[in-house]
Amino acid sequence: MATPILATPEQGSGLRPVHVTNRNGVLEVLAMRRDPFAFADEKRLRMGKTYAMNALGVRMVTAAGPEAAGEILMNKDRAFANAPAWSYLIGPFFNRGIMLLDFDEHRHHRHILQQAFTPKILHGYFGEMQPMIIDAMKRFPTGDVKMLSEFKQLTLDVALEVFLGLELPQHEADRLNKAFIETVRAGVAFVRKPVPGGRWWKGLRSRKILEDFFYEHIPAKRAKQTPDLFSVLCHAESDDGDSFTDEDVVNHMIFVLMAAHDTTTITMTQMVYRMAKSPEWQAKARAQSLEIGPELTYDDLARFEVVDLVMRESLRMCPPVPAQPRMAIKDTELQGYFIPKDTMVVIPQMANHRDPEIYSHPHVFDPERFLPERAEDKAHRMAWMPFGGGVHKCIGLYFGQMEIKTIMHNLLRNYEWSVPADYEMPMDYSALPVPKDKLPVRMRRI
Ligand code: HEM
Image (cartoon, rainbow, N blue to C red; front, side, top):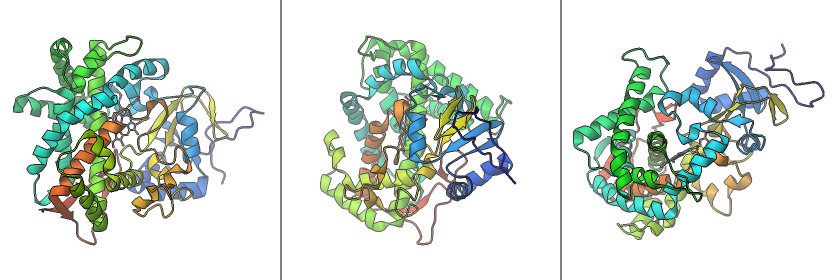
């Protein structure tokens, strides 16, 4: 039986129609969540790299492979937009965050926001971050430890310090943390309506708490410059002299807090897992950390070759943002296929990172594939893209790597960890990829 098609291209256009899977969309989504790699392999064999499904009320095309990713992210025709795609997932909670802006408006905001991530400003964040990480790592628990939970708490504490730069009483910090967590959780709610007590409702309530908090502190932040992100955003100016309104500052603060948090937590959890399964890599990384010395300068961050290889390979095997959605805002084409207006187009980054045409033994943890003599990631400019690509490429990629390296350095120097030989981390792929069991390890001080 022929598979149905998404839409018929105009005669003479030379474009092909996209075929739609003939399985129920809900079943497809469940299969994808269960095992995204098996799902991608099955689709590639049966339907090729570009196929469609009607899932959860949305017409969705998946376009696998680095070539399609490049075509979508570098689209000169401005046919693919972020806001209508991402808003579907996180809209009401991260309203007017930078990732939910498009084209000229996005460029305008990004120019100003970029001022908060220059090397000079990053030096300032590093100076704030390091002492508190050193201090927190002294108190890191030993015995049976759930790494995901520990990293979540630690990165949230770092965020309060480095992003907000405010001395908050404990009850106020706890209130903010709770509001922040509820705002993030709301995006993956099943019931996407404000039913009192439900996740969506709590998300909206928490967004309001965060907004009120930031508005209240803006006058003080505008009055005095300090090295935290909040203050930097209040004073940032583009080369053309543009700056943010109070409303912009609030929207960007809430979005950046969210963008920075789970992504770094997931990366570190993956790194700890991989180094528990491959103790030789843990030993090599530790030897390098011991050699570099306890306190780091900003320039020392470039010396962590082993941690860097482990991080790259962990980000390849499990990119924290597993897919990038865009919305076709006009009839367009992609890889020779016809894409009608109002189709959601998805770059399946996590599956792309296991593409056997690019990576040798793609399911094997092999950090040396990133060494210059192998450089498998350089096969295509979109072969390795945990931080995305094009105009929306992660603005915090240096900040994130700085935080990850500083935390891993302190962990490696002071502790050793392991998992049972037969342990395989059970993954939950229903939203961002996290271990269902929060990765329990045996942690020992050395
Ligand atoms: C390992 C850590 C991180 C990973 C893997 C990551 C991944 C990504 C990806 C894939 C995108 C692009 C999404 C898209 O185009 O649809 C993105 C955008 C973004 N990230 Fe990150 N991120 C990380 C850490 C951070 C940190 C620490 C910050 C802030 C300090 C941050 C702030 C942002 C912002 C603001 C955007 C939107 C940029 C724009 O739309 O112009 N990220 N990130």
